[in-house]
Image (cartoon, rainbow, N blue to C red; front, side):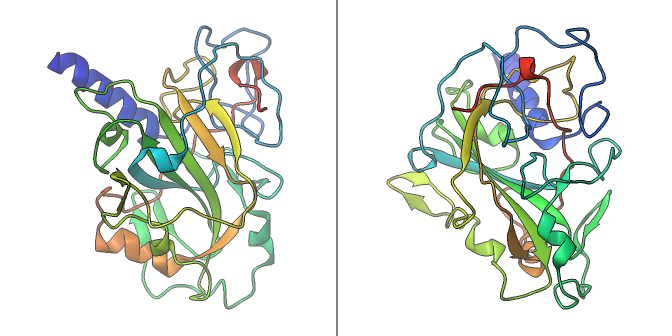
Length: 280
């Protein structure tokens, strides 16, 4: 049983925390027709949330509201994994999930003060650090399991709850060097419980009604020919918002229960309708 549990935890953790995949032409599949497309799997993520159609016939229920689930993880990706009208500047093909994805359109219209370099390196990892003008996509991960928040998707399962409902609340931000922009630490976790459930201090508001759909975890282990088997309910807000980069840096530097200190890369966009669910 320990071997089975460890395999599940390892697979789930890799599915969420490692990112990137093989694709071409702004994330479009390089395969023609059904050649190379994985079959028998549920719908995949990320996607263009402005495109509602999908032909994947694996059906599962949308997870409950985040208020009825436990927060189990918060992390973020450099550039947006998803695409929408408001974040549609293609960042490039990238390398193993970095320097790819999409940027907020507003990032082209920032002023000199918002783009002023920071005094310290922000969330520096082996692939570099964050700078004003960058885009990040933040994921608040919720689970139906009775667990406490922690590192990776492994924190969203337990020995007695190995196949939970999972929900990811999602917001794309443009980072600015401006203390009047939103403070990331108002959206994080401080041990707060509501009705006995672990909850963030708040979720983003004012960026449009979240687009909800069924999908999967993301990660470099997955591409058009090797799909993620995990079932996730997504809620992606369609508008970008400005976020104070210094508040993100503080979250990385001060330590957090999620042990997050840098931005993750992105899985390129899934565009084949056979791999997407219908957005209703």
